[in-house]
Picture (tube, rainbow, N blue to C red):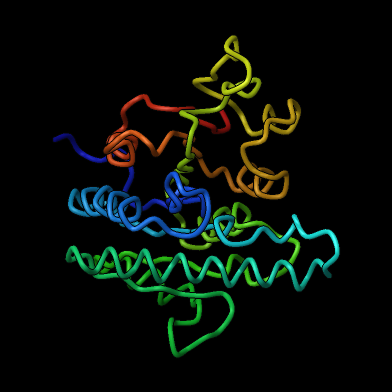
Length: 238
């Protein structure tokens, strides 16, 4: 096995990635499979921090009759459920893990503290960031970009369910959709590609944080990307 391309990564997992074929909630078989991929990544010496979404429980922006702030906070709580489930699955296979949340809930997780998060990573622990950025109107993609900048991650690994990279149109609807191997952040903004929201994209661009978008459905793709295999779409400034 080769040397990892990256030393410290942010792995961004959507809530849907944890629901398997159920579409909602948590599929235990799926979360065990993802945990085994993360363990392999951890075992080759990569420092792993994870940001989880909560779309398998609730999407704040989807609420029509609810106050947006309230709806977003409900979504943040969904991410904490996912973070705890992932922590449990990882520790059951021997990976020491810490959950830090942007909203304090000390009975179940540590509050997010940058220096403590970095220290956990240096000690070989996997760190899972829950509750997004702790602020309404910001997505977990933006939280991933923010945490990557704060902990000085080498890359954001954006694991997607049902798609293996970035296309110029939906490949599930258009058989002629073109897949991009390389993109710049400005291309994402100019072309309106729905990889990340514009706030997250701009934050990555301003801080020169590379991004790799890939499919999580194939076994060991997380490890393959970290080892530098040409999988998915790489986004970075030239």
